[in-house]
Length: 164
Image (cartoon, rainbow, N blue to C red):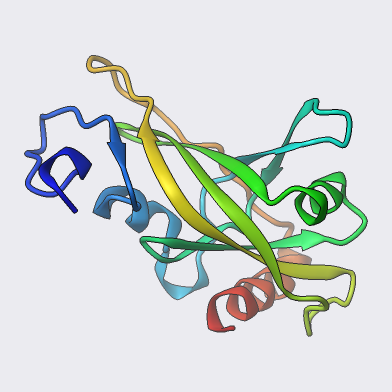
């Protein structure tokens, strides 16, 4: 990456755009030990051109240029991604991460082993835009905690998404 694309930027410096996830953003979306990431907001385009957003807790960073998520095949997001591969993902995370990630999608697994109504979608990162104000602090991310009886299911789904 060039200097304009994050590399060599000091901690206090504000960057605008990058061609891949900067290390701090990657770390938020690539949690160890199958931990659940903060919820991201995934934006797609409906068939009539209307923007559509949906929260996803399954989005994982595989590499700084590749994201992966599990999606219900009956969800409007899935229909939109099959018709139009353009996607934008919004992420907020403490203390200073507010980014929009633009990319293109493709379905890479039509039926997850853990649940056949789920598919795995990959997102090729095209651009990461820093939306963080220069002053201020993000106090919390959008968190999600599954009920105790479903924890193993969620860990299994995350494992399948990550290990594909």
